[in-house]
Length: 405
Ligand SMILES: *Cc1c(COP(=O)(O)O)cnc(C)c1O
Image 1 (cartoon, helix red, strand yellow):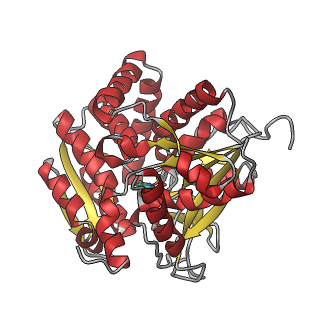
Image 2 (cartoon, protein in one colour):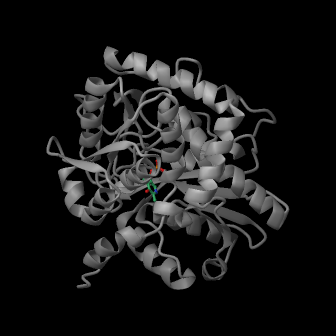
């Protein structure tokens, strides 16, 4: 490994939103002004100590930061290799890391004087986080959700409505996340003056991938300080699941310059790497443009988006955040995948050994993290980001295990 980095994380993306050849701004002209305004407001907010302090206070009092760093003793013994630590984002209010970003963007909306919020959601976690912050700040909230997802995640739909959000079902296309994003963008084009779009992952047009990453950097910053305090050193390897890529990039970002730390993102292998059966963009995806950004996409020869599948709705998306594509090319972050059946058995194993129900998304990281722990020595450390809790997934797991509730 070279002693110096071939890239400077702090200089990415460039001023037009590019991470090397990835990223950028591919949107209708009507949104260019709104994105530029958002970029300007974010640039001033991030350097404004009052904004940073207010966000820090809300993250503490409302979301529950800092989250714990947890030594998974029994999981470590079970694997018989490296010590396994979990960063407990599952303990956050509303159940996942999503609230870090939703809070940050709600404060930006207020700064722009926008009183109406729209968002997309797949499994419902981002919708719930957005509905919660909108209730807290008294903002109007409309969440777009595919009709199929609304049925699969009826409980989250009810949660959002309880917190005052309007949930609009989307009947177009596959009736899942991608179609919900399309509807949200259509709404934004129409109502852009008074509306802010709280996008839920490190995806879409600039400045979203950068901004969402920055709002999640707190995960990696805390984890680094906590592990240094506890073990006096950095981890050997870090593992996180990658849907759009927001929890992973936030977790990894402050470790990018630490070349001794191996960083691994885990995609959804679904039922196996066959067309339409998975959502692992680096396994068979190709360069293309989807929903504002140039990145790796699962598409056919005509550029039509492929069907995707994963047991976890939060990883079931055809594109990966552009920054991930860049660091994969640089060889700085490696990518692996975990399949549905491995995820279902790890979900049960971790629940039984640690008394923690992990989200099915996060369980992808656990599957691969356990493999890595087995391959390493007992004096080494694997740090895994537990991006969310699995309470939302118990109905689905029961159905897959043929358990009647
Ligand atoms: C939404 C979600 C993910 C996937 O999104 P990223 O942007 O890739 O982090 C992962 N884990 C949980 C618990 C989620 O809710």
